[in-house]
Image 1 (cartoon, rainbow, N blue to C red):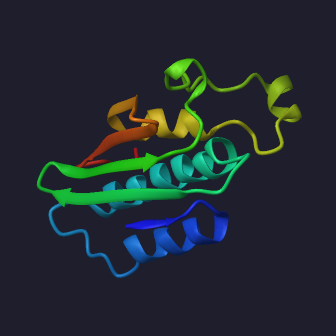
Image 2: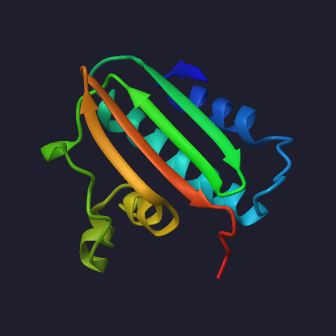
Image 3: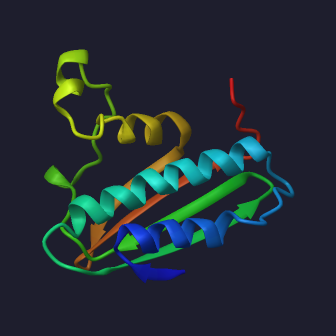
Length: 137
C-alpha cells in the first residue's frame, strides 16, 4: 500500500489494512499490536521524516503462521544518527514538556520483534515482526 505522508492518509491506510481483517493464524492481540506499532511508526514518519516536505509512505503487511511482518519505506529525512531511538521512557519531568508524551518508540520496542532500520538509496526502511502468539499480558 502506498499513500501520502499525512495524518488523514495514515488513518485511512490503517483502517484499510485492519478493518475486517480476520486474524487467521495469528491472535487478535498480535493483530492489535501490529496496528499499534504501525500507527506509531507511521505517525513518526509524518511528523519527523516529512516535517519539511511532502512525500509518500509504502507499507507491506503480511500475516503468516509466525506472526505479522511489516515493512515501511519512506524517502523522508533519516533517523538522527542513522539509528533507531532506544525507546527509554522519558522521565516524568521531561514527559510534561513533551506535547505528545514521547512514548512511541517505547511502545514500538515493547511490542515488536526483529526491529530493523536502515537507510538505502535515499530511503528509510523499517521492518519488524509481531509474534503470532502476542499476548496482552
